[in-house]
Length: 397
Image (cartoon, rainbow, N blue to C red; front, side):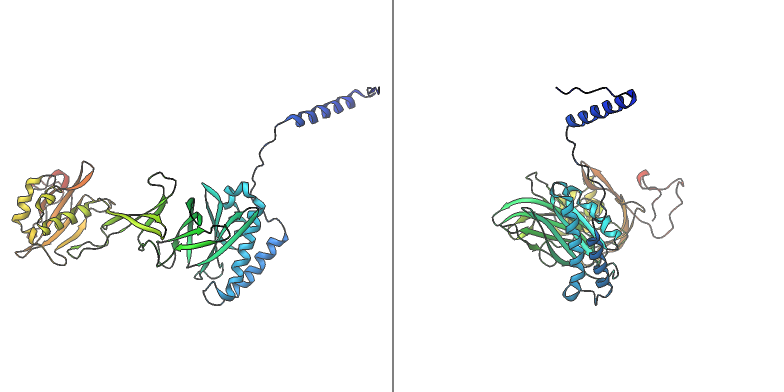
């Protein structure tokens, strides 16, 4: 049997022994998960794609993203696919990491995916040299080992938010809803619904501009699982349709409505709509009930139901026609004001009143009102003899 001889130099022997022990330790250590690092361009191909795309972006004619202008967007999309493929299917949760890499190459993209289903990714590509140009959005998804992509044109858009889910529908196993901000209408929300084909080779566009949920330029929307069934509903807060009899100035919180859309075979359809409680909505309902002669319902909007006699004596049940009720102004600096000055026009007279509102048992009601005397200016705040209650002191007349 071969015998190892001890080296003549003890220091050398100690070094060799330490190396053997270190290697043995590495051999028994458990395997660690690979750490995902910030992305850097993988090779010259990425640089070449970005350079060619920028040249074509600079020579783009018109603001359309289609036709001969499409090639530049396609090159950006291919660069994105290469980065996602390098990232790997198991690490698609980190897909947003490719955005700063592409931006550092002079491109203009936004990347988003759903943490609950990260293998479906959306990338919005814009022309970095033409801010008013249309954009193209690309969906990326795996079909077996193949990372596929599909593009569709968008108006000037930013801030995309992707929500993806298993729908279980015949012929469309997965759905993807996209919310985005349209720059053609400031603060305007857009929505699109995509459904995957049965074989997973492409996506069908189901809901889009002009087909599907309608949202104004003031809407706020989100996809959320309201009933806990694993599939989201579209919840929209938007301005309610205006009434001719009630005028609300722009500097006063407007009437809002909550709209709930649920997914059907045709896409997202309206399931429920209801007013958002506020002082404005309480005033509207009170005036509406008086016009309809529904005094009992109108009473339920009053903190003091006995004040109904005063309302009828003032002839408010006969205040009809455009602008019969007009909010002049409200509590300044408050997103949920608690008082308004309201001008009411009846067949007998036109008078102004300060309406004060209160949240009672979780709903807005009219707490009280007081007539505004136009014959003399109001006394300064704190002057003895001011006839307003404490809750109304300091308000303008």
